View 1 (cartoon, rainbow, N blue to C red):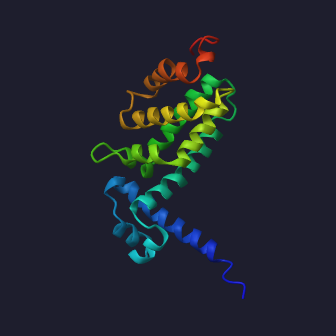
View 2: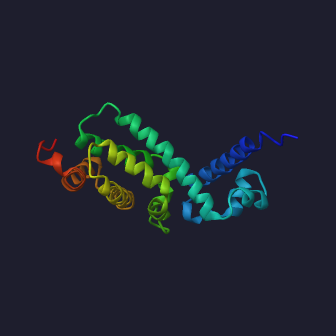
View 3: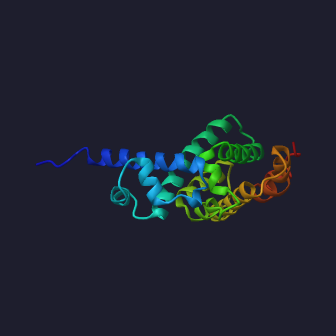
Amino acid sequence: MAGDWLAAQRTEVAADRILDAAGELFASKEAATVGMHEIASAAGCSRATLYRYFENREALYTAFVNRESYRLYREMTDQITAIRDPRQRLIEGMLSSLRNVRQSPTLASWFATTQRPIGGEMAEQSQVISALTEAFVISLGPDDTDLVAHRARWLVRVMTSLLVFPGRDEDDERSMLEEFVVPTLLPAHTADQPAS
């Protein structure tokens, strides 16, 4: 007997349904306050079923963050695909990512300051976010490969900081990125080109 060849697809669909239900809750409540019982109820399944797919809240949070990180990365790269200048690509990529997170009620709740802002913790721990940020750093041009992971980790911290403690407006954040981030991530490019 060949076994259930659709089992993996059903598992993926069920997990996505649970993550979608969690996302709806995150859109209406701060992520740190959402419990597994609420997620199971919103997904229309029992807690036992929920725990079959996600062993604990941390595993569910990680799966949700990873899924959303891929989506945000695709959106950001689509938005900056025509930009070739590494300085502008860096600045617009960061501003685009900040904008996309802030405009998503599902993701904005991860950086709420009235509760523990778990988005920063998740960003620091997520291997997916690390890998995507490293890919972004590499896309900016030749770099010392030993520094890519270090710079990507610092970039995640800058993004988290701006999500928790935003600038006055996008122009203020653009100015901060030009003054502090570009010279650190692209030191060879800062001497070549004037600030925009």
